[in-house]
Image (cartoon, rainbow, N blue to C red):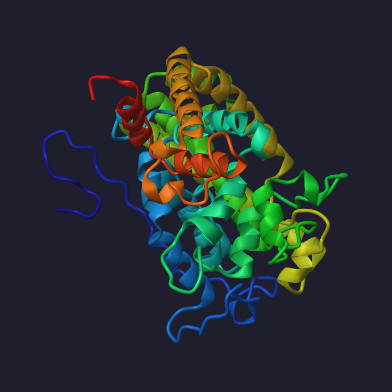
Amino acid sequence: MAEGQTSGSGARPAKAFKPAAAYQRPPRALFATDPARSRGRLHPEPESRTRTPYERDRDRIVHASAFRRLKGKTQVFVAHEGDHYRTRLTHSLEVAQIARSVARRLGLDDDLAEALGLAHDLGHPPFGHTGEDVLDLCMHEYEGFDHNAQTLRVLTKLERKYPAFDGLNLTWETLEGVVKHNGPLIRFGAKLADLPIAIQEYVAIHDLELDTWPGPEAQVAAHADDIAYNNHDIDDGLRAGLFTLRELRDEVPMAARVMATVDQDYPKLEHPRAVAELVRRLIGVWVDDLVQESNNRLAQAKPKSAEDVRAAGKPLIRFSDAMNDHQAVLRRFLMQRMYRHWKVNRSRSHAKRILRQLFDLLLSEPELLPPDWQNGSDGPSGKKTARRVCDYIAGMTDDFAIDEHRRLFSLDR
């Protein structure tokens, strides 16, 4: 059989591709975060002989209980609605993969970028952003709830695996990147007292320099998050039938242009493969734009170290203005067609009632909490009790929250 042909009646000949040049890893950039110069950990530990500090951080995150629970926490859909929709776990893996890929192309520390991608959603409660909104409302009189601050709380306090300290004792660079991945927290008149209490309490003992931009790997991870959820929500929305491919093409010009290239290369491709190819190519477009724009900004700023990136006064890793415009169009489409779809609204309404009722009952009757969670409470409606209840609920998976609600409110259980 000749090269490029396939067997089988009616089979389309396979395309003959020219072999690519051998991959060469880009050299390490001067402004990459250097693991040999890490600022270390709050609780000193001996260094590993086989792994860098950021590799150890990544591995500790993967083995954390909170990381495993992400498999039962959803982005948009409730966990029991289907096995193929993204969960916080699959989303975090996708973010980590994109962050690692972009970091490597920019000559950054890809282990740190990957660790940040894996850790960034550990503080999310069940039922996506709806759960965060409900817990913040429940905690209004008790210093509020913020998923980013809760991630820090998980990493520094709630995970309890080691004999000498609470939390995972991650490096300064990983914790800084988790807290500041979207930019400085103290700017434009904001003060430390305006920030979530978990962040205030932690930086009092371990200064994360909240008034500067984060290191380059954290900036990469933040944009990898955008790439992952924007494009994979297209896949999930189409799979759920919340909108059609025609509607996407009609209302999102970038998707229409990329889909045209899919149609040109693979005429009459069946729908599932067409959607997968569309999403794959869209991710490539976003990644290429991020790398090109970031390289341009880095070339202009000429940072000589990760500290120079932090002190630049502006983000050096970012999308082009044109891509930000495309992102705004896509987000408006997803907000209208997916996030506020009537079917999703019904799930959100159900989730609100579950979490609100759980919080109110456990706050008023903390003796209903499992014994370990009663430790540190200060009685019904107490401030410490409220935080313990909040931590307990925030750690739940979707299905556990539903089952716990049934156990506490249904006489049939």
